[in-house]
Image: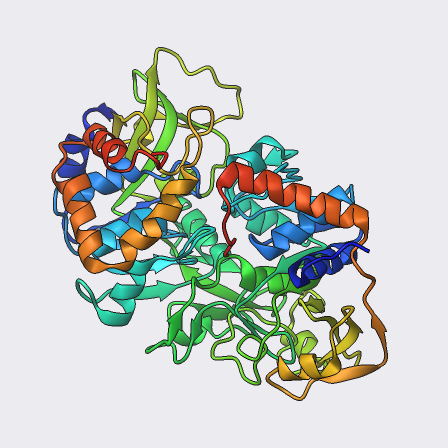
Length: 287
Length: 260
């Protein structure tokens, strides 16, 4: 049953060193506040899973929280590279990061398999691609009915999935809308689920087919307004495109990055504190 | 005569190839620009699908990310990412997959993963994204990328997404459902795969570009079709629409070079 609590309590109680953690959100609703809290609490040895590592995992990787990453597209969208991810893969800084690379279709299917309680997913994919040569978890089977060669990929079964949503009610039922990505599947694939929300309301005003996670599949709901920043929350605020651009020079340099993490995350109490420091330090950048 | 840039020529030439009414799975960056130009000019009924979930997106500015809110707001429907890949792409409902890449070879196989060896890369690129399955399952694939010896290579460092493999009927033998790349549009020319060998050959050269320039910008001995034509220059309406789209985009996102 969903516990409505602070993000600090949720992260400290539910995420442990060595856990497999998926923080999902496809450009939209990326749970940045939760990522910061994981850094703030100094979690270590996490096995991270996420289709697009984005800034959220660039920060976690650079801050030394992760030992492995399963992903399918590792860029800064519309900008270029994720420099902390590259530094960890290419130079082992701050320590080596084991990567397992897949395609988007594979990852999406792997979350569906996880949510479905299956050990692996089947898809028509990867034929002719070199990815299976560098990732031995991608395999092929012959269809028992038609003989067609199909690809398989292991299900994603996170210890903890973290997502951000627009609303929860006071019982902890969660509502999200707009671009949904793989969040529902990621949540249902996990043993524990943390959801940060823009707003806690008396009643979710949602049509019958809305994307709702009932309170009994959610472990913790945390009220964190603007908690997806610099990603966006449809109906609440827009994507901080300038933040994504500004991240590039910050992440390029180890010292600049480390100082940024220290000032914006380690030296702030919570996400509200981050937003305040961010507004002071870069007033020209939309947070 | 209005003047135009080679990038504008490339985008316009690619947009013209998109048939009106086609269901098009769009990659971010150059493919998204060309597909939206097509939607605003020659192909008003094109259906644009983005991998984040929007189907029938009609954005007024170009998306900076694959999941920009405007794609959802202007779409006919927004479905989950698993549904996009399972029901719509793998289900065989995509006519054209529109892709870019960092490297391409003579059979239009694509690399978006690494330059150099995988374990010790010279340049680490973002990776696969949706491309491998788009390249496999879309009925046809269109490719748009700037032409240079570094991008048009004799041998790919890594095959991320399959083109015509090693040529001929290799795709068919491998059991791939789609027909594979049908056109490659660059800032210099338009290439199509040979009907038999499936090797890319130049079929149309952009105005003012020479064969030598194309040969110089290709990492293999590029062949020219018997009846190479000159690409029609960008028309005033095409340029006007493209520039207005770009201006609206710059105003919304801040001016920048759009990367994948």
